[in-house]
Length: 148
Length: 200
View: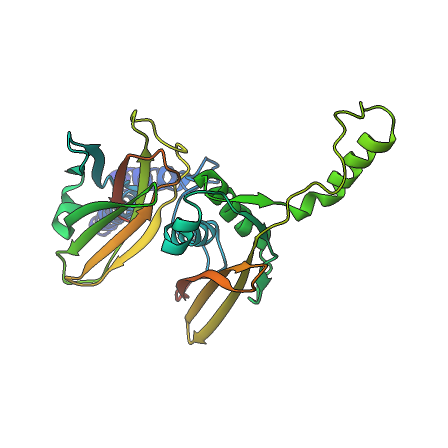
C-alpha cells in the first residue's frame, strides 16, 4: 500500500517536472541571425557594400545559410536583398526584419519596423528584399529569428 | 505512509506554484510582432500590406523617374472593403500615406479634413479677427495629380477543422488627367487556422 503511494508520488513528480519543462520551452526567446550591409564609396566614386553576418543562435545556424547580401539604388533610395538557403529537409518558419541607418549610424524611424513571416521549404533558396524608408539610409541590418 | 504524503504535498505545492505562473498578466508587447493571433485581419497583416505597397511604389522605375525632379500631389481614395470583416481600411491607407510622405517622394492632400479647413478659412475671412494681409484666401489649394485607389478582398475556405483565409490587397495610382493607371500592385496574405481537438 505504502509502496504504491510512493510510486504514485514519484510519477506525479515526473509529470510536474515534464509540465514545467514544457512550459519553460514555450517561453524561451530566440536570438537570431544578424546581417549588416553598409554602403560606402571608394575614391573613384564606385559604390561598395561592406557585409557582415553574425549568428547569435547555434540552432538557427544549422537551419539557415545566408548565401548572398547585396544592395542597389532605386533613384536615391537604397534597396537590400539577401539570399537565404534552408539547410533543413523540413519546411521551417522564420521571421525577418530590416532596420535602416543613416550615414552617421543613427537608426531611421527607430523601432518602427515590423517583423515579417518567412517560410522556407526544405533545402529551398529564397530571396528577401526591403526598401529603405527614405534617401538618408546608407546602412541596413537584417535580422532573422524563429517565430515568437 | 507519512513520507508518501509529504512527497505528495511537495508535488502539489510545486504544481500550484507552476500554475500560478498562468494567472492573468499584462505586459507591453512588440508593436512589430509577426505572431498571428487569429485568422482575422491583424496588425502584422496591416504592416505587411503597407510596407509592400510603399516599397513597390517607390522602386517602380517610371515612378522613380517621375519623382526624381518633383514631388507629385496625390489624393487617397477610400479602400473598397470586399472582405467579410469590419476593417478600419483608413488605417491601412494612413500607414501607406505616412510612409510615402516620409520617403520624400510624394505629397498628399487630405479630403477628410476639408470641413475643418473651410471653417478655419471662413473665420480668417469673415470674423474680422485676422489681418487681411495674412488671411488665407479660398481657391488656392493645389489639385491632386494622382489618385491612390485600393481594393481589399478575402477568400475563405473551410474543410473540417481547417480554415484557410486568403487576403488580397490591390492598389493603383491613377493619373487624374489621363485616366491611366501609372502603377499597380497587390499583396497576398494566407492564413491557415487548424482547430485543435480541445481548442475553443
